[in-house]
Amino acid sequence: MSLTTSLRSLSVRVADGVAEVELIGPSKGNTMGPDFWKELPEVFDALSEDESVRSVLLFGSGGNFSYGLDLPAMAPVFAPMLSADGMDARRREGFRRSIRDLQESVSSLARCAKPVIAAVDGWCIGGAIDVIAAADIRIASRAAKFSVREVKVAIVADLGSLQRLPDIIGEGPTRHLALTGEDFDAERAFRLGLVTELADDVVGRGRELAAIVAGNPPLVVQGVKQVMNHGREASVQAGLDYVQVWNSAFLASRDFNEAATAFAERRPAVFTGN
Image (cartoon, helix red, strand yellow):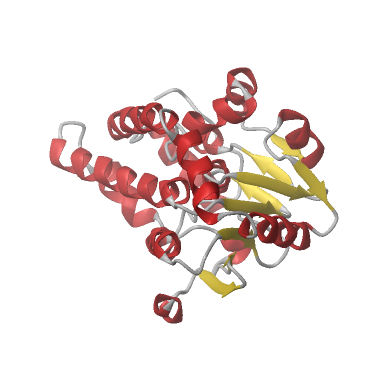
């Protein structure tokens, strides 16, 4: 894959039918900035078309999967909305398209013809949950920690977790996690069904699973993914379209500005409902 020579947030290696995609930052905790959102669909669309690839393993570097959205690096996406008055429809439409583009980046895992195995170690927060929810198999180390944390920064999660998690863990647990924003550990993730295995060496176990999948008939494996996705993705997309409109209308708020300010000042946010 020639495109990998210019990647900054991902590293890709292909051998024996398995593509290993590693999150490499460049920010601390593999946070997801502009490079990540641009490169993720480039990589997964290319892997989808690469006939030498039969399965994909996705994992993070440095002991964490990802801290989630890189808020400082993504500030230019939010700034026009925060500076606009409430009647600026053009800016709101531009923001809706920005949300759509980020959603498409995450959905590149779901639309990839090859099964994607997410191996989670350390923290998996916010946007990282969106990403693993779009994978086909999720496993975790016993040290993994998770959080659907968008509510804590005054955002309705809009990149797929609210649409995909109910099919994975059920609607009740999804509502609980999304409304509280609380952290939860690997054991709870396993009990909920968010991950199907816990492993001491999660990347090693991920490699084993990827090799097993790669050893099966490739068109049958791809067929299993396509058949299971059929029908479900239509409802997922409807939900993604709806939250684009919701957040383009309501995300620009005093509470969101307070969340961003509190994050920068390293203090608890105080929300007023405005």
